[in-house]
Length: 283
Image 1: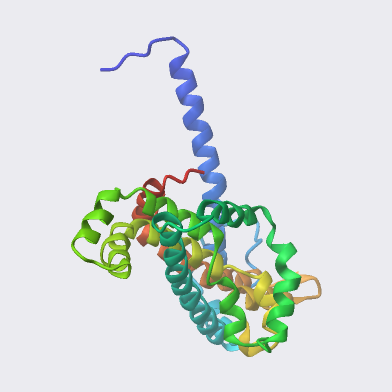
Image 2 (image 1 turned 120 degrees about the horizontal axis):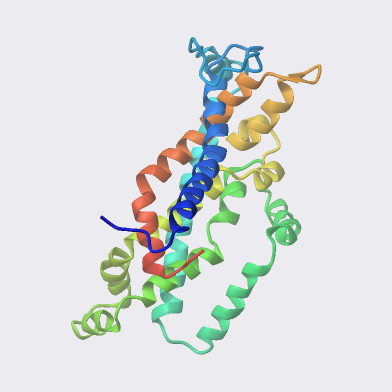
């Protein structure tokens, strides 16, 4: 049995657990309220006394969600944009990171530092020139306009470069002695060894793309090209009548938007932690 060293250790431990429980409840209760409200009929979400769990489950909000607006189309658009953006980030960032980590060329470190410094530039500053480029290419209301600007990220290159640098140089030298080309070394040795970091980048890219609102708001001008986040924003505005929002319907839409992100995070969280440890990136 472990005894406390000081008399105040036990009260401090109790206080610490109480704070953790309070913070956990503060984060979990709104999430539970969102799900349970989506299962309530309209007008009963603010009933008194309040009900955290509804007595009967009403799934009509989910049915109405897909009949009132083309949420299926929004889902498909978001899926297409997310898949190609994540694939693009994994391919392009891994190739660039390998070059910065393992290839030797003039000014490599200087170029990387300058490139890394662009992380300090807020996305809002580059928004207008990026939009003008996409507009000039005629990519408004197109998938390429939604996908191409997001297929590379400075953070992704930095994350994978750290992972590549963590692999001993002996692997590279041994493969070169055996006659392997640079491409073979990259694809057959380094990429498999950095699987957790690649998964971490894929999870970050998935979450960022799936929940992005600002860029689709500029590019997707018609309803057929809207993504889920953009559709949810328009849906929330359109379901507000006489300053009263249909919260069960809006919460059902929010659950549909949030559910894929939650599923991906649950299944990828162990790779996520391993990737952070492998790349040496800390919060």
